[in-house]
Amino acid sequence: MTSASPSPKSPEVSEKSKKYDRQLRLWGDHGQNKLERSQICLINANATGTEILKSLVLPGCGSFVIVDGHRVTQEDIGSNFFLDADSLNKSRAECALRLLSELNADVAGEAIADHPDSLLNTDPKFFNRFTVVIGCHLGERVLTSLSKVLWEHGIPFLHVQTTGMIGWIRIQLNEHTIIESHPDNPKSDLRLDVPFPELVSHMDSIQLVNREDSVKTPWLVLLFKALKAYISQGAQNEKCGDTDSPPERYPFTSKQKAAFKSYLKEFSRSLGLDDSDDSFEEAVKAVNTAVMRTTVPDEVKSILDDPKTSKPESKFWILCAALKEFINDKNGQLPVRGALPDMTADSEKYIKLQNVYRDKASKDANEIFDKACQIMKQSGKQVSSITVEEVRLFCKESHNLRLLRGYPIHEELSSSPNSVLTELAQNMEECDQELMFYIILRAHLRFHNEYGTYPGFDDSETDISRFKTTMLKILNEWNTSVVAREDCIHEICRYGGAEIPSVAAFIGGAAAHEVIKLITNQYVPLDNTFIYNAITSTTRSLKLAADL
Image (cartoon, rainbow, N blue to C red; front, side):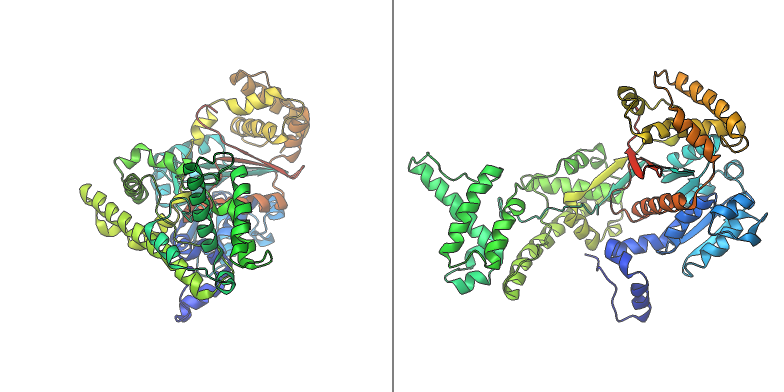
């Protein structure tokens, strides 16, 4: 497995480790390497766009390109911390580049003072070289064209917009695979219900003959031996015909675990342990989380059942195909993770137990590596493209694999958001404002497409009437009975398309986090729409799909 921190022997690596210490704890060296190889494109260096780039330049993205054909206005200077008074009437891309580049000398930046629609016309392949493309405050026509190009080439695309107190993030992903999903509450993989032979042999070699041995023993050993005795007693009672209240074969349910806890306490006391001993307390507390049925999670099953495992093309799908073969050979069991939770115990005993799991994990990973190599040979691919370290990491995280398949923005903009409209229609009086603001933001895009400006920018009162007309036209196209709320319409027109620095900073930071997730292939990104309402300090995530 990849080391979690660089070797301190190299001064260069050591300085890098100091510089990026906190983030290395989140995504490791391998994640940082991906980030440092990334190429990011930002379209429009407005307040929101520069806030996004700031949070990508600081952690060390590889390079970035700012595409922006606008010149700096007085409004830009008032809302954008990366523009100053001297920037007025100059290229916004070049002025933003100058100050953003000062944040991190290791990151290369480039400014292109041109509009994205012009680049799409003159050089359609321009955007194909980027790892991620971010567009801020794009018009509906450009947004549609860019979405089609990036969707076709499988390049992740974020459309981000802040209007006054409202923020909007929309992530477009064709397919995104995640090996290291970092679940909030990861489950231990101890195999107490289906112990592998090496574990059984190790446990049987441990003799708990007195209190001193029991006190220094890891709680997992205590739990294993108590389970073995508990199940043996249940089987003996069944043979003797004692069916009044025999112990269950294996305690999976809450009721069964409560019965086993009582047995465990008596078992521990018989070994000379007191209720206050660490191993006693830890063993009892661990029953609910350690005594679990070993299964393949449903989300992992759905990935392994995907047609792409039959004819794998990418590294991820080749490893999934190998994992599927392994599970079929091992009676439906995933490879052992090889990690143990912390335990209060004698160090030597804990390390020996830990090595049993690690050796088994290494053995399982080697089997899957061999299967992956065989699959690659059969498909004519280079075996060297997958390393043992990558396979070990994949096996360790195989319980938490994730797959996201997205929905293109250009199809969303030409469709009715049925799921949103249905929820709004069911509860118009007490519906989330964020849902209402989503459909209003859709009208906001249309208004800008029709009039070339944002509602309220020139004349708030006049634009309210025009915006209502645009809103009504869209709702009629969607064939819905939903009526836009007057207060939300007035609120969006009051902003005139202006950006508020605090809202831009919040949305910019959130969008940057999502970009890092996409680049590192770690953590589960937003799927796929996020609305932020700074008026009420509330958020709402929406998954817009083909049926919308």
